[in-house]
Image (tube, rainbow, N blue to C red; front, side, top):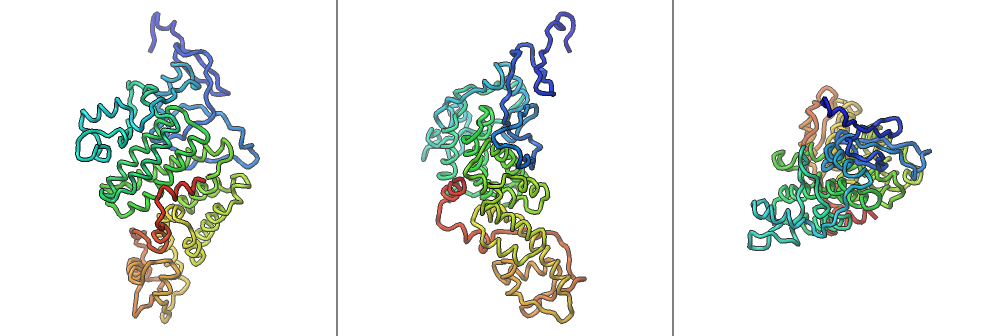
Amino acid sequence: MACGSEKQSLLLVQSHGENPRVLPSSAPPAVTTRPHSPPSAGDRIEPTCPDSRPRSSLRARTQTAPGPAGALHSWDWMRCLAMGGADEFPVGTCRGMCPPGELAQRERQGRLHRLELREGTQQGDPARAVKEYSRPAAGKEPPRPQELRPAPVLLATVRYLLGQVVPRADLPPAEVHAFVSDRLRAVRQDATLQRLRGAPCVALLERSLGYLLHASYWLCQEPPARFDPHLHCTQLQECFSWLRRCYQDGCHDGEPAFQALFLLYNLGFPEALRQVLQLPGPVRASPKLRTALAVNWAYLEHDWARFFRLAQALPYLPSCALHRHLGSARRLALLTFSHGFSARNCRCPLAWLARLLAVDSPEEMTELCRHHGLTVLDGAVVFQKAAFRDAGVRVHGHSQLLVDSKRGEAPLLEIIEDACS
């Protein structure tokens, strides 16, 4: 608290609409905020504006809270304001995937990942080293321009990670994911510190989301000690929220595909459906989004035959987004059938039920039925309303029919690039 002569050092108040902003006395009196900012850490699903809002007109946002994973924290924000205003964020000048200073420091400290070393040595390889995520902390100096990568270098880094690192089969999948996830987080941090917006930011977020959706399926069978699905879900939702804000800048080729992925990942959530229904007409009318809406309606209406028929027709990335809901959909389907087909002498062929629910094999279908207390006799299921046991969603592993068969021989980077175009 200021006292005595320090009281003469008054804070300047910059009015921003109806919300006053208090700035240090060293900051210039005129500060202009950029209209676009990443979502806050608490954002899970960010509402969009109605169709009547012109897409070119953005509501000005004032950055007062920490952003998503890797976003600019409050101490960064105030320091940037003191350096000359929100329009004077640093522009990166580092031309490599990892700043030379960080590479040398991590090499001295023995903190280089084995994916960043020269073959057969303990020396860092500038062509393979990637900047790691650095958690912001109070009192920590903001990065200098030579420590930040500009948008073209960030995009090249993302493509290197997805095209060269993710396909590595000689390392455990969880280790590869931990490396790639951390480096993608650092990419988003650099983008936030430079306040990237528009097409460059969209390109980074779309490719990051494509990988994160793939990883959520790829690692679904890993133990929690190696892969935390809750933390992964948080990162996905933050990226979706940030990307969908970027889409408000204008038209982007990948918007229909990623709005559809957003709805499929948040299947059955009323808020997600409301936001999608408020998108502009041309986006809503796109085939990809109409398919996602049809899947969502079938899920909400408990039309399980239609739901799984549509799910089998989805491409690879949408199937990855939908995968986490398959367990709950099958549980609800068996609950529905237990009430609708409850009869002492009624038998449902197990093979037919497996085809209807898109289960890979009758054996897997048998395990699922018994998990919910249903009796399986002579290759048929006996549905009894009183026998159904709501034992929760069974841990759902990989699905050959609904996901794996759609991957094909194409590299993951190519699949994601197709979704972005």
